[in-house]
Image 1 (spheres, rainbow, N blue to C red):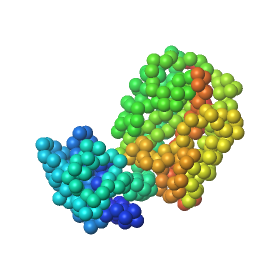
Image 2: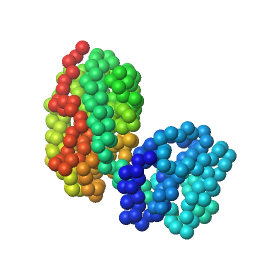
Image 3: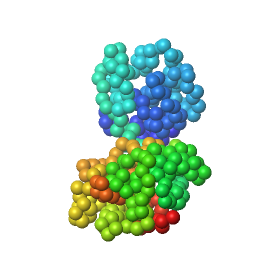
Image 4: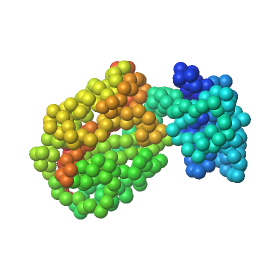
Length: 360
């Protein structure tokens, strides 16, 4: 149990007028209680109360350890976990629920008249998770460093006649050799026109001279995720592709430089988007500039054209502009950053200047 994190969540609940809340996101439960469980179809929840009478609702199947200070409400297969939970919920008050609560469980709680009403309360935890403490930031730096080292090795996998799948299938072993625990997401490998798909999954496409090579990759270490994208060219690069690459790089560097505590995140997106639009590729930048990241590769919060979130020290998110020309080429460059009092700390250090891989 992390008392400091609990207090921060309770403060957010107080400001939102929420006295009791049910949390079902396994990563958020781990963040507060110190134990991760993938419950699959079973009910798994942390009940948080302003009276601090918290409890963890757990099936007997799960083996719990690091949850000191939190009462455990045990149930067995065949028992009604929601009915047991009703003994802890004040039925005369609203109950906050997160967006991970399954409809079947919410409907059961409503059927049992468990609470006066129900409110979406995910933000009470999401806002706290968005600002990493120093222990979390150090883990983010460590896993991002592994990703830097991995990218150098991934580049070495590129050679004549290799396929996207052949490259992708070697990545997990490389990550593990470097100390990572697993992927943070399935790696994206795109050659040539496939890179213009944005989230193209590796297939049997064979590398050709002149292709761009897009790697969007990440790993997990000690519960925290990395995410980075680099785009290379094999053999040579034509002038249009070079212009696209330099435009994306200019936008990416400008966006990172623009980051300041207190600014609205949509302004960072606008910084990169304006550069790309001014070069005539606005319609080819088809996604937000970035997403929050930490225990999950995509956490709540983003850097988009409509994001009203204020940048605050400890926030970690991606900065990843891209230009995608269907049927031709796709370029994306991505780093993870930490918002600081002075600006931003860039967590990725693998080179970003245009690199041409020699034909082999």
